[in-house]
Image (cartoon, rainbow, N blue to C red; front, side):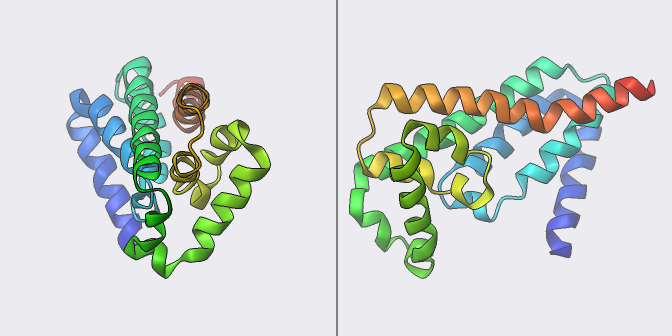
Amino acid sequence: MPELEQLARDALAFVEAHKHLAPFIAFALAFGESLAVISLVVPATVVLVGLGPLIEAGGIGFLPVWAGAALGASLGDAVSYWVGHHYRERVRDFPILRNHPALLDRGMRFFHRWGVWGVFLGRFFGPLRAVVPLVAGMFAMPPLGFQLANVASAALWAFLLLAPGAAAMKALGW
């Protein structure tokens, strides 16, 4: 875990030194965090939470960083949906899922129970975020319903990660 903490610190230091890249960095982090299975190894949530205070303290515009994170998250889930839709049951043979079948089974149960709401809610639950869009694609969820839940949850998720830190810095006058 110390390696992830150091990686998060390094990423935040990079953003602080290259403020003009903050929306693109937020996009890349959120994309990795939302991409099926990859999100298990990308420590993006910690970095995105840390970006909140940097936005206000560093004079970085909130809206572009939020938009970058929301777009990255929704694109990551869209790619995951497509992979699930394209490969269907063969996703079980993907190396990381073959080694962690319980994760996919948990995502399937969650999706079956909640449907379109599962896509929305799954974004807010760490390990489920890695598989629910994949499962939605596997079960051929209608694309419009998926994208509505995907985009809405990505926008809210990005806001909830970034806004508290930015608001706290503003309230403190930093």
